[in-house]
Amino acid sequence: MRGSDSIRRLVAETEISVNDLVAPLFVREDIDSPQPIKSLPGIVQHSQESLLNEVAELVDLGVPGVILFGLPTHKDEIGSQAWAEDGVVQIALNELNAKFGSHISIMADLCLDEYTDHGHCGVLDEEGNVINDATIELYAQTAIAQARAGAQVIAPSGMMDGQVAAIRNALDANGYSHLPILAYSAKYASAFYGPFRDAVNVTIAGGGDRKGYQQDWHNSREAAVEVALDLAEGADMVMVKPALAYLDVISQVREQVDCPVAAYQVSGEYAMIKAAAANGWIDEQAVMFETLGAIKRAGASFILSYFSKDVAKALQ
Ligand code: PBG
Image 1 (cartoon, rainbow, N blue to C red):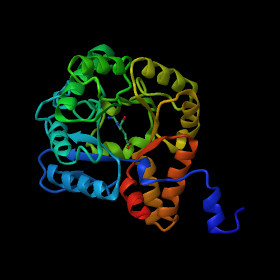
Image 2 (image 1 turned 180 degrees about the vertical axis):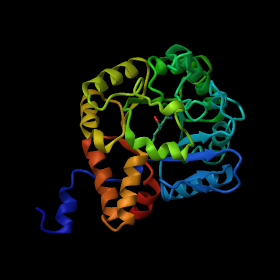
Image 3 (image 1 turned 120 degrees about the vertical axis):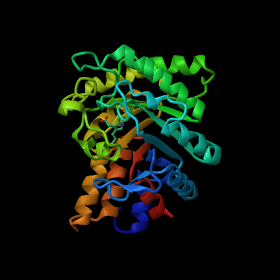
């Protein structure tokens, strides 16, 4: 049953298709040309113009989704550019939706860390701790701004309690009850996010971390609680993040729920493969397919991956 390529193809349980992929994209204010990201070879900070070209290419390749992250010029204590009508992501959403909205699902990551001057995912009290309830009000405001600008899926990644309910209520009250929420439900405080912080120019003030609100890697059952809460609050799809070091969690969540389960192959996962391949230590394309295949086999319905374009090209 393993003796030829054809029989292996016949009995294969898992396939990677272009339909499994969402490409994360970074759009930066005040640049005229795309800027490379050192720790994410092949990925760039886009200008509004280069972003349009990139999405046009992804549409041509048949990639069904993109998720946008913004790099504002102005950051402040509360992250006000996250919901500004002329904020960098809102401008991008408007243009992308007008040009490509019927061909590709345009998702908006919803968090404040790219917009706050202290780098945390919410507003802080005097001791520097995130204030949960004040933060989710700002998330609700941001969701409305993103919906107005043309986001087709709202994807909250801040791991605040009650964030999905706050966003669902705000969307419903403002005429966006049709917009689905992709909740980053089981999001771990992970060292694999390192290159992402380069990508979005975020450093957490005072060398802090997100262990106070993101999950602890020692725990898996906790993910079940987070997922159940998000679904009860109105999430339409749930996410596990990172992916490769959390295949057990993906598989457990897949058993737990009947809605789509997304997985995020994060920046550090991509960077490790790129770095090893650049040294000639591994076969990049083979490892790309093997890792994405493992994530799919664990139970992911679709995968957010910096390899999305490469996979689509390789499958053509
Ligand atoms: C938070 C956010 C992060 C990532 C996606 N959304 C960073 C964090 O939580 O610190 C990481 C994605 C990646 O590493 O590729 N806005």
